[in-house]
Image (tube, rainbow, N blue to C red; front, side, top):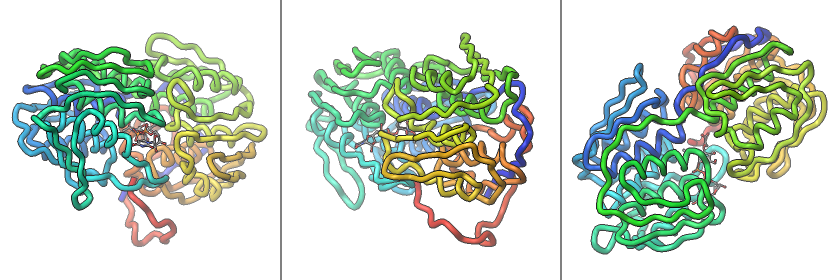
Amino acid sequence: MDKLVVTGGQPLTGSLPVGGSKNTALPLMAAALLADGTTTLTNIPALRDVYTFANVLRVSGASVSFDESAHQLRVDARRIDHPEAPYDLVKKMRASFYMLGALVGRCGQARVSLPGGCAWGPRPVDLHLEGMKAFGASIELDQGYVVASTPNGRLQGGSFRMEPSSVGATINLLLGAVTAQGGSRIENAAQEPDVVAFGETLKQMGAQIDGLGTRTIEVQGVDALEPVSVRNTPDRIEMGTFMVAALLAGEPGVPFRVKNGHHPHLGAAFKKHVADTGATVVYEDDVVTITPPDRIRPTSIATATYPGFPTDLQAQWGVLMAHADGTTRITDTIYDDRFKHIPELQRMGLDASVKGDTATIHGPTDFKAATVMSTDLRASVSLVLAGMVAEGTTDVLRVYHLDRGYENLEQKLQQAGIDIHREQYDEFSEPERVAERTA
Ligand code: EPU
């Protein structure tokens, strides 16, 4: 396995470039299955989740080619003749469950493995299934697989209100509804930029959708969609992570640039909280210039759906707040158990406690290097961030979690002055500490 070895104390200088969005790329790949032809996607990040999903698409009969250096992915979906997503792939990545909507939308039927639990909790898919039923699918469970069928090869359409609002369920229902025989309505739909960009692509493919970016989305089904060429959006979570990195490890008073992003996708809450830390931030077209203050002001946050503070930036924010002079509270209202990184950070000297959906962090922390374990994608990047400001050399184990969502992170950080490199290690020669569950 790989680990990242980070020696703390070097300031982050210059700039960091943002790549294409993971959480938009995956639904775009699913959308490609709806068109009888070849869809070309650009600005697709070379990430483990993209490779996993490419394999999921291939099982269905699609032919997928990925030019990693050009970040261009092509999906030839002329022959989709095996409407199934197997457990071996779905267990690696929950977003494989998008195959439910994509295959029902294209073939009128699907057999998709249930994803099971994840590293920080149950993460159910009941809304995906109830929504499909509301739109006319029959759903059965067979040996851990969801088997969906439609009366005459197409969903009928219908109305469904989701509670809570769900990114994944909104995407799955859109994938199914765009080729339904009738109209569909999704209430309390997700407004996340990933959903909007995905929905806009469906519209380019010929889908009839109203209300993207609002809580009510209406769809009028069409007979078929056309293949398109589309550029994926920049990754808003990578952008936010780099802004946090700049505040944490940049030099006070010295501007740092985060390039190639799309700052409106950060949402109002994240921007407000960044300003509340005392940072000076200038937002331009695709560049954010961020100047860290002398002292980070403690700034409590509560995650919420877009444009609220993203849950996917909560762990990183916790590390930044460990540096602040005072006490902060990090509340995750989306996932109430997403704090697996806290015990690892405590091994590096963090003074924090977790109660229910809230972590209370007492800063400032003088982080000390340790060997720490990644438990999921965002937790692992938070450990790297802590390592960047820790005294000594930190080993972040199991970085395959990080490789799901950050492309070439160590090369990017090296170019911005950080002492970090990748090494291989033998998991079984390391002291065994944490029993792992798949994410
Ligand atoms: N929920 C249900 N039932 C469902 C579906 C969701 O109760 O059927 C609940 C969840 O348990 C959670 C809330 O609804 O409490 C929201 O979950 P959502 O369905 O929106 O999450 P997701 O679609 O599974 C996506 C991202 C996650 C991100 C969340 C929230 C992708 C591939 N994943 O997950 O990203 O945390 O939205 O914004 O887009 C990550 O990138 O690190 C990551 C985990």
